[in-house]
Length: 143
Image 1 (cartoon, rainbow, N blue to C red):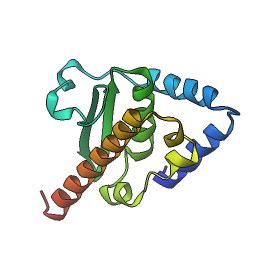
Image 2: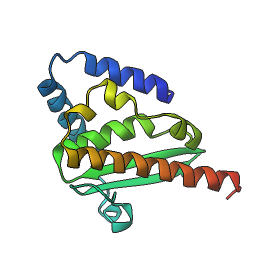
Image 3: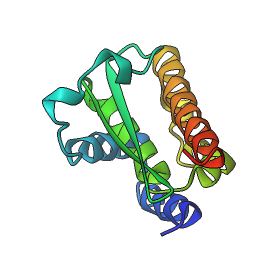
Image 4: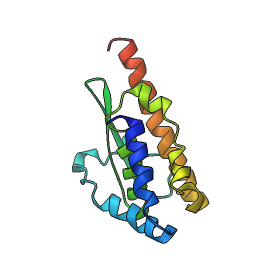
């Protein structure tokens, strides 16, 4: 499934909810479905800087696509990062860099976050983009 198809599916999924409270609960349940990370991946180097909660974002380049794993110590943040990796994981670096996070506004997420959570969300998106850019460079150099 391409990124745009995943975005469309996410928007459709969130359109089923009538109020923000239901969406909020859905985000938390999405986070609960994420598999736990192996203990050795809870390293400082994978922590996303700028998040109020602890967030680990682990990238891997496999067959030209970036695969993300993630976790957080806060339920809502874990749900938010699960949305991001659900969209951006298993995509090429170019696809990741070309997909703006407008879908977060479409589903109403940004409007309902506190300032510190919104800053953390921006930090996660920035980190995903930085990993994609690094892998794009690596691929271009033939490494």
